[in-house]
Length: 176
Image (cartoon, rainbow, N blue to C red; front, side, top):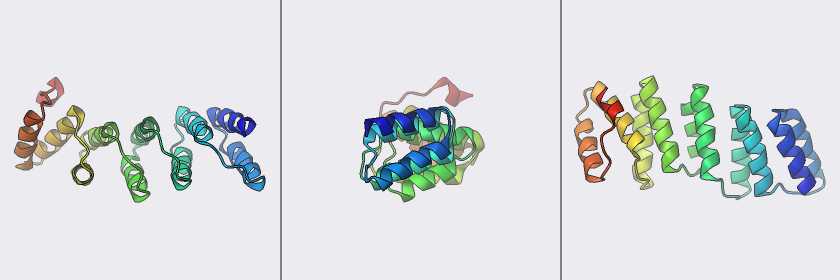
C-alpha cells in the first residue's frame, strides 16, 4: 500500500486527477483501501494545485471511509474554495456530509462572507457554530459585526457584547 500512497501523492502533487483515479481503481480491484496517510498526500497535492472539486471528492471519500479529516485539510480546502468564489458551495458540501468544521474554518468562511457581503450565508454559519457550540474567533466576530452593522441589524450589538465578554479584542480592521 505504501507504493500506492506514493503514486497517488505524486500524481496529485502535479495535479493529475486522471492518474490518481487510475491508481484508486487498481487499489479497489486488489481490495486495498487507501489509508489516512494516502488520503492526506492526495489532498495535499490537490490543494497545492487549487483543485477544489478533486479535494472535495477526497474529503468526502475519506469521511465515508470513517477516517478523521485533519482540521488543516478542511481549512485549506475552504481557503481555495473561497479564492475560487465557491465558499458557499464548499460549506454546504461539508455540512451535508457532516464533516466537522473547526473554529478556523468557520472564521475563514465568515471573513469570505464579509468580503462578498453575503449576510445570508454568514447567518447560516453563525447558527451552525452556535448549534455545535463552536467558539467564534476574533476574525469571525469581525466579519459578523461588519455584516450586521452594514445591514443595520441590532444583532450587531449582541455580537459586540458577546465578543467583549469572551475576551476578544476589537481589531483595527473592524474600525475601518
